[in-house]
Length: 368
Ligand code: TTP
Ligand code: MG
Image 1 (cartoon, rainbow, N blue to C red):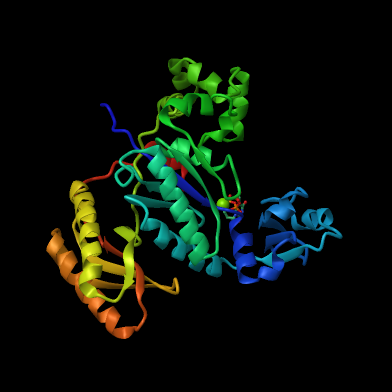
Image 2: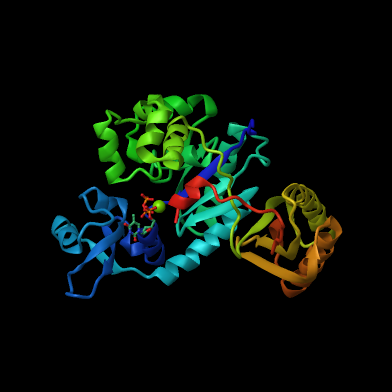
């Protein structure tokens, strides 16, 4: 079955826990910052969760025992902090909500990473995807103060590997015709699901790089690793990955966000923009066969603060007019509560239901 061309982004926040600590306390910037998980056995025991790039220059990375990190940073004016997971989660939620406004679909893959399907909104143009990524980076930098790195590619596998190439604050684009030369020289453990044991086994078979793996007889891979993994290794090393970007969980939504031609408090003017966004959203959830139960709006004010409001419907709906009515109501109410002009507006629907059974695909076994 021929699959349609897609553009997928993988967004991975830079040195996430440490970056959030710098955001909370800008005085930390420029110093080596280490966020550690203290095991509590002794004052010193535990491991590094992450560190900023200043600390990484001295070899201090995730997983290093804290006492070694202390040694390596002696005399370098380092700052050691305990993990404050709840706080990072709050910031992560805010960022994910923003990113959602830039995607046809978003799948969160961890506290600091997400896959974004952007095929429709970029009309499958890599140039447009690059512009979109710059807009997204600028908005998150301005509104939250955080940087991230992005991989742009034809599927999740390539986007994920690409996102790691230029960190921090980098963007790496791999077009379909570049996939092979991009993957070829990489070691096999760049592929999801290839751990230490598999690396050793493949080394015995003379397979070191992804190019080696891609040329290896698939039948022999199946004999060695079993059908599922053998076929997966063959396809992945050839850059083939048809795994969709799954919207999942409560946060699932389809939305659009855009800048108004001029700052305004005029409801009709706002609704013109919203109507166009609803047209796009409608097309998307109709194609996916979804009904929605919630309608939400967002407004970025002239001082760049973001406000959102949402409404749950009495029963699921599938039409455009219901979104329009709810969005209008929400904006009307919101305008009555503020005096400020609005700069950007957005609308989204969420609370989806659908009957279609979603087959669990191979790579989801690895991304637990
Ligand atoms: P990563 O994205 O792997 O790392 P990072 O964001 O700190 O750095 P990079 O710039 O390379 O993306 O992981 C995200 C967060 O997960 C990280 O900030 C802290 C946490 N984490 C751990 O607690 N332990 C670990 O071993 C790793 C790898 C990450
Ligand atoms: Mg990260």
